[in-house]
Amino acid sequence: MFGVVRLATGTGPTAIARQANFWQRIVALVRGPNTSSSYVLTHWLFLRLLGGIYFVAFLSWWMQSPGLIGSNGVAPIADYLAALQRQWGSSIYWQLPTLAWLNSSDNFLNLLWGAGTLLSLLVILDILTLPVLAVLWVLYLSLLYAGQVFTSFQWDILLLEVGFLAIFLAPLRVLPRLSQQEAPSRIVIWLLRLVLFRLMLESGYAKLASGDPTWRNLTALTYHYWTQPLPSPLAWYMNQLPLTFQQLSVVFMFVAELVAPFLIFGPRRIRFLGAGLMALLQLLILLTGNYTFFNFLAIALCLLLLDDAFLSRFLPARLVSKLTAEVRPEPAYRRVVAIAVAILIGLLNVVEFGNRFFLGSVPAFAAGIAQQLEPLRLVNSYGLFATMTTSRPEIIVEGSEDGNTWLPYEFKYKPGDLYRSPAWVEPFQPRLDWQMWFAALEGSPYYEGWFPTFARRLLQGTPEVLALLDKNPFPDHPPRYIRATLYDYTFADASTHFATGQWWQRRKIQDFMQPISLDMLAK
Image 1 (cartoon, helix red, strand yellow):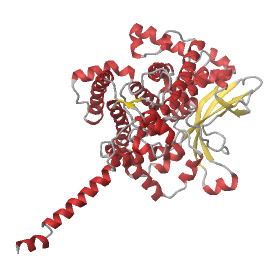
Image 2 (spheres, rainbow, N blue to C red; image 1 turned 90 degrees about the horizontal axis):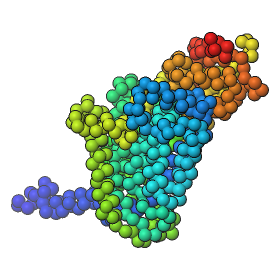
Image 3 (cartoon, rainbow, N blue to C red; image 1 turned 45 degrees about the vertical axis):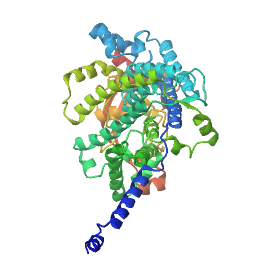
Image 4 (cartoon, one colour; image 1 turned 135 degrees about the horizontal axis):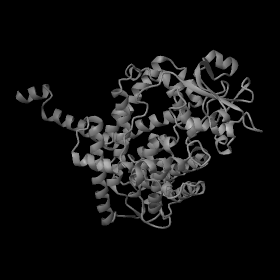
């Protein structure tokens, strides 16, 4: 009788067995096949991608450096460093650690950025990977501080943070060798996963913590596609989609930034799901905007959530067999180094999380260490687009021979000509175009200290600065006057675009900079 009752209520032995089998199937589904998680393919591919990102970052900067911080640029590094040294003395060397202190000549700076470009190729080829990554990190740290406002972007510090940890993930050998791989440090892989966790979580948290109503009412993307610094052509089409789609897209973004990061710490297939969600978000951002190498670097971090068993399905069989045929265990001394690095980075993460989420409630000794090491940018804060810009002021720079007829300078990628299509330029970053976006938001040429110098260089017809532009309306000799006007830009509506080919529409807001001449600047 009691047995019948137990079976009827679903608590008998048969029901319990069925429930146990059900949960075993769920656990097996979440965990995936019973494979030993190895990361030889993962770390090999990650380092090759990192080398490619370094290559793009250095080459992009090398091409623009003369016009930005060279002796004839808009923010000469020699003048900048001299002013800091006069104000702070020798204490400034640690606060701004850059090799430009040794020599700030154009030739030396070109040597640094050229060396970074060439050394990046060695990482791609897996030649002297560990020492080369160490040198690249030093060079990029120098670039970060030498670049001043033109390297004040979150992807620059993200590359430094990832690049530092990658040093301890790289193999210690001279020449490339596919066979006899060394097992990568699981500790360092988890430290890099922690970078991804913090990057995504802080980005989502910043949007909510800012109190911006467009994020909270899910309308941010109705502004984002046309107010972002450098939209892609696809951004115009995405902007035409209905409000419901835009709101659902914001919901997905919050899932990818606030939920998916926690899946990093889940079982194998849950971790893969997190990687897919975060990588998909980065891919969508990559397709609709130009954020240099940022999205590629974030996707490379997502790669570290995948193991060899997963990646082997998509890589050439010969490469897989070579890399995984003979894997040597991680040497003991490297494990000790990884533990030491983990202790330091863990401490800095405690400070970062404490300051970000717990209002600075961190131990005093930890805060002191973090403050001393802050110039090295080992652990950083993130939070792209914490507040959404809901309008797009755009600066149009013009020159004139007589003060009556004005001709516009055209930048390579930022909006200007209403009929010129937005472009795909990533992973290259046109840093002057980006800074023009920030200068327009400030609304004053004197808030950005480089802008008056930029105007002076145009009046002088400086080749290094003109090389940063797409169209110089005064090819024979520089103009007598320069002015700048602030316009409000929006995407053209669909009927106008398809009828006329116009991508943008605009209206004048105000003068940004009154007409100036070299004679006026000399007074």
